[in-house]
Length: 61
Length: 135
Image 1 (cartoon, chains in turn red, yellow):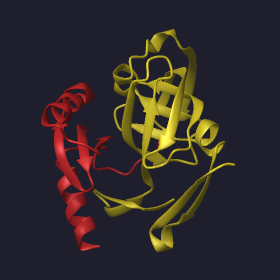
Image 2 (cartoon, chains in turn brown, purple; image 1 turned 45 degrees about the horizontal axis):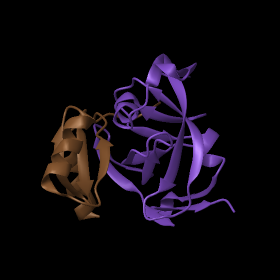
Image 3 (cartoon, chains in turn green, yellow; image 1 turned 90 degrees about the horizontal axis):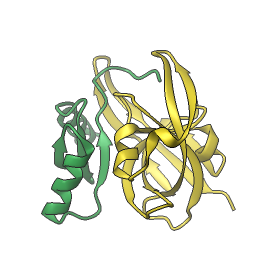
């Protein structure tokens, strides 16, 4: 649980940005998905997933 | 497949949300992208951020336009056929996804398209949820 909280705190710094995650590590981040995709491809990273980090408010879609 | 709830930090403290990695593929060109989506039983459709559509090489505004109402107001989405599968799974479905300009979300897995094809069991008190493709 403490690990999850540390991860959530870390991710909050990327609010409103796109990130590439490998497990619970941020391996690339940026304002556009295209930039983040380029970064992970250039670094040769595998098994990533993209995520747009929501703002640190509760969500009501 | 079982998944753990994802933890996020808001001004109200820590929250657990059901997010799952899904691979979206454009059936017209084979471009694919993995996205960490929110499983949202309250969303009527499966919704994707505009930039995901662009990255998949979709001519977004050529899709069928449909309006979606949420607490934040009305937003237009453009519907396109897209293949979806859970990451690390082989089962794939072609569904209609609505691509729209919204700032807070990457992908919402909603009733039409996602819940049509997957059984979802939420056990938040255990911090896990299970997704099974229909047979």
